[in-house]
Image (cartoon, rainbow, N blue to C red; front, side, top):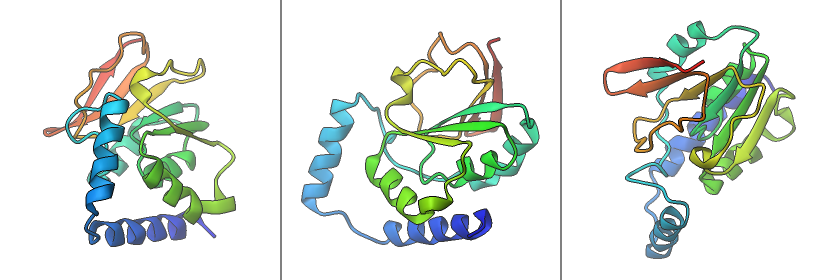
Amino acid sequence: MNIRDIIKRLHEHYKEQLLKTPSEEELRKTGEFIRKHGLKGYEIWFCPEEHLYEQVLELLSEDDVVFDVGAGDLRFSLMMSQKVKKVYAVEINPLILGDALKIIGYDLPANLIVICGNAWKMQLPPDVTCVVCLMLTRQHKFPKHWKTRIIYSTKNGLKILERG
């Protein structure tokens, strides 16, 4: 299966999930998860910022190693993996990530490393040249020890923070 087909399947799955109403038990567990992992506001929710994908891709080079914060269902990580040397895709929500990995299956690119965890509490791998964070729901500040270029979304579009 090619990447375009996988991304289409991920998009369709996302639309199906939006139509489901969570049970009281699911909401309770989500609240517990948010508190346990120190998330703020709506950081747990995945909302793809597809309108920014092409702009970000234009800012990346084939030599980049990307740390994708809030990778969600991995669709943008898959796109970046086609352009850059390597992508570390970090997503804290195990349900979103688990569903994405089931859909992608053995078609997961070799240069896409998937991590389920809280990016805000991580050290950047030493080979990272760029952090990408398309997460309008972000409440956390970027850790000061992330000494690299950071491309992130705001309500006014993309911003680039140079910390090299």
